[in-house]
Amino acid sequence: MYSQSPLTRFSDRSHDYARYRPSYPTAAIDAIVQGFVGGAVAADIGAGTGISARLLADRGLRVIAIEPNTAMAEAALPHPNVHYQAATAEQTGLETASIDLVGCFQAFHWFEPEVSLVEFHRILKPQGRLVLVWNDRERSDPFTQAYSQLMKAASGDHPANRHIESARPQDVLENSLYFEQLHHAEFPYAQALSFEALLGRVRSSSYISLEENDLKILQDQLQELFEQWINQNGEVDLKYRTHVYRVVAR
Figure 1 (cartoon, rainbow, N blue to C red):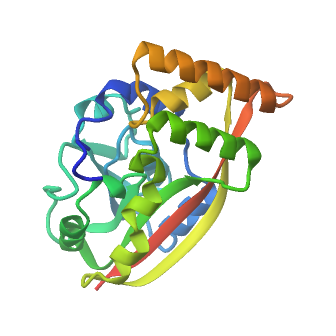
Figure 2: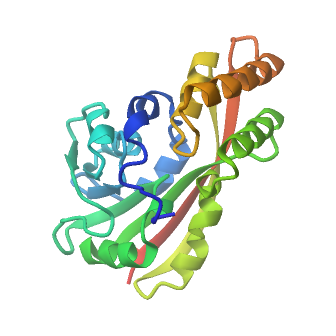
């Protein structure tokens, strides 16, 4: 995945990303920040439009948001405890042993894994924490499954549509020389979407074509799916299992 233009592939969809991408469940953020006190410093690597960075900052952490894509960073809402820095996962530019928590939210599959882990270990303090987080669509929910099948077909089964499988986080972390104490937890999450928001959510995906004809075909298919599953609030619920992989620096 890291060979497929990760630094620029979201440039033409940054505003949809900022408005329509899902957040993360409160319980997951609770687990991630547990034990940290005021003044702790987090590096959100591949921070995008700052969805996760703001969640960490709301909990009192000072967050350095590492994001190489200018369009994504410029689409981020400001937060007094979030500072953006243009850099990559492989070369963050941060000082050695300066970070308490490194977080990669919906991003690690775009990094060169071994090089990134070496860099994360360098910038983390001894016994500092690394968390890799993904929102994986819930396979047991009928609407979410139908949506997933539609995205699979529209993307040509692009590997980014299967980000956890492509990243193989457990294999990467279990075999790392730099981290230990692997812990994995899952949390349920649901994103309520109007039809406009559902379209925006689709447009934010890097593996979906933004060509007018392609989007028109997909929009018609989404309209049919939306009308089949719309609830009394005029929305559909896209359901996820949020995966959190946590390790400690050796």
